[in-house]
Image (tube, helix red, strand yellow):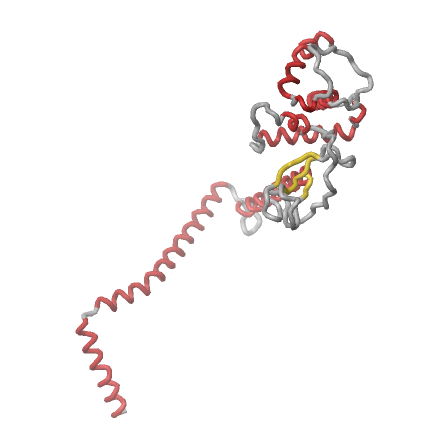
Length: 273
């Protein structure tokens, strides 16, 4: 194992200097690390945790924080966030850039944020049923962004908050994992609706399943009905225009003759009737 980790111990100091901001490094970075197994480090039975947990242990070491803060529950949260980050990357929801001063946020995205700054004021729970899913903007109309919780109750848990939260009015607060679960539930509901719609299309009125050839016949029948309705609607729309065009096509002399004949006819009918 020592021989396998030897290349990492040599290149790790260079990686730390390139990726980790100097203002959070409390101890000098050695030219080369010594590979040694620390018995007090939490050992997870899941072999898939080695990547994100290694990053977390490096961060704890650089900030001079005891490794015993890692618990089984925290490992489960790290694993969940790591899996969802991969999902967001595949779905195009992440926008990655070259390593910069934001590398600190990149390291802290997989676990607790051990900051020396005081924790933010308590936020009220966000459970508005009218705004399910991942929020796009706050109630006040301001933009929202993701941050890491630094409270003892939910260390490292990510949540959405408003960038204008210090202003007047109601502002959004929602846990990121709950928002993601809302999105998944909405997708499942949409899939169920599409499935019901598909069942309706392939089911005859008597409940029998319709084969694809029969479905095309049914579709052509519906299309013929739609075409007939469109023709009738078009004919009704053209009817008033035809009457107006016919009246406009009469000679002007005819209007004068009608203007004379109609009153005379009405007078005669009223006299002899």
